[in-house]
Length: 115
Length: 115
Image 1 (tube, each protein chain N blue to C red):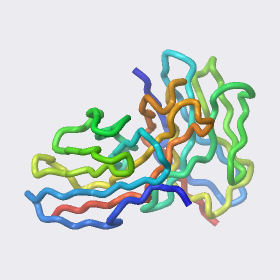
Image 2 (cartoon, rainbow over the protein chains, first blue to last red):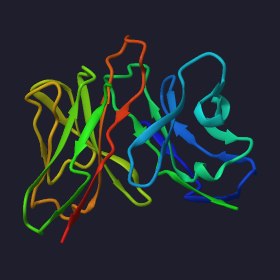
Image 3 (cartoon, each protein chain N blue to C red):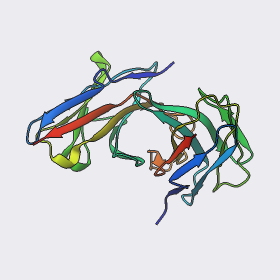
């Protein structure tokens, strides 16, 4: 069965500092990997996704993530965070048969930004 | 614009009452999903439907029911059998495989509070 682990429940960083959110997955085949962001009381917005090809993927809002098969990881990074990045971030894994199988989400990492 | 609409945004019900959450999409997606979100637990799948008139239980289906009479609509009923119904509920739709659009689309959520 597929699973996703986000080991950090809550992370606090200073505005302007760099950020890395960790995500480890377990999946039997080639995974499709996603990062979503959720502002309080809102739905989820896709930040970026990895299906194949270049293992470093760029997303919206200046985020990027790197797929490392050997480590089963898909960590999210941003060089310099902004106060508006405060939100909850979810990593998710799906199958190559996307659209016919459900995504599995991690438990989320809440990001707090301090001035 | 295409999208998913959940209504209402906030819902209050007395304990022991059934309540139905609405989810409508105009994206022409076959697959629709209901998730429940609780603090520290991420998103858990309640029910999903891959085609009209068919639906499958997810990981936490007990105490919930759904119907899929139309492609556009996937309402979720929280029954009195659900032991702890207070939560944030998210509806999502997924495009079919092979369309070149491979990500989930989420509604804005409904926060249900049972008193």
